[in-house]
Image (cartoon, rainbow, N blue to C red; front, side, top):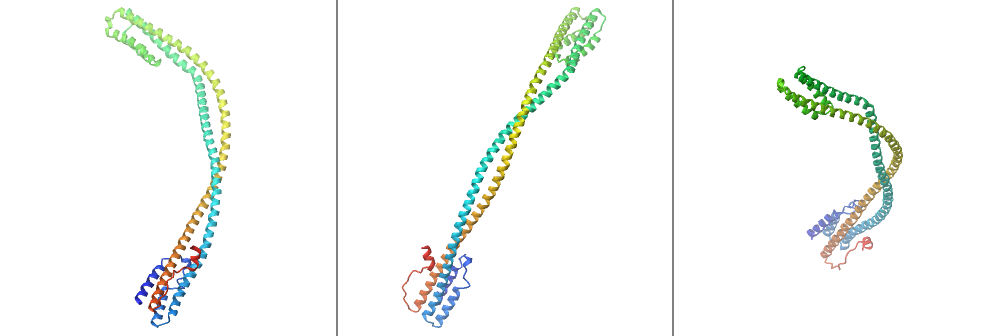
Length: 367
């Protein structure tokens, strides 16, 4: 019998130790080991049955009292949890509505700013392009006279070199000039052909010169005459090109002046458009700043209340877990004490009708 009591008591101690509910820890008020020791002592001293059962009854009463207190505390906790949930829910909803509405307005302002900024970039690019174009036109008109003079001198030098080559060929035919002079003037012609970008047109002349130079004293007068005809044709072509260049330059100057007037009109329109777009951007930036501040404040409020809500949920879940865990542990205690009572009654030969034990307060509240 003593071994059975020890086993039952050990099981009870193990079951009681799993309760995590520290706020209602009555371990200093009751101890299964102390109950076991006291019951064992009374059994050894042949104490009356009622005396032994009274020890067990006091233990059960302590468990019941603890359960009743825990029921009351849990009821208060449950009410506070629902109150906190309701408050945080409203705070989160209010902050969410502000974030939603302000974000919508913020997005409208941002979208409008993007569109306006794109328009401004296009306008500025056009303004820059036309300003650059006007600068180019003015620079071109300013330098056109010097350019024309230089290119005109190139054409004149080319014509002069051709004339000089004709004179040398005529002198060679009369025996008064040499091929060395022709070689010298051909170098000058080559340079002028580069300057006026007509090297291709000069190629047949240079080839004819090389043919004449290879024959020296054996040259045929008809060949000299043929080269002279080539030079005359080249001179006519160069002179026609020179005249076309002069006419083209005059037309370009007139076109540049017309473009300058039209571009100035466009620049004035773009400058006015730039001013209107900048005013609109200033207004949109103010809108974005205001709505961003509202969204930031509402988001902070939303985050804070959501965190507090989550913390409340976690805490209330802890309350619930502790409550049901502690309640199960107490039910186990009562069940084991009942088994211990049965063992004591069996020792005394008392047959007791078994009745399901109920927690006094807990049974009424939960079942």
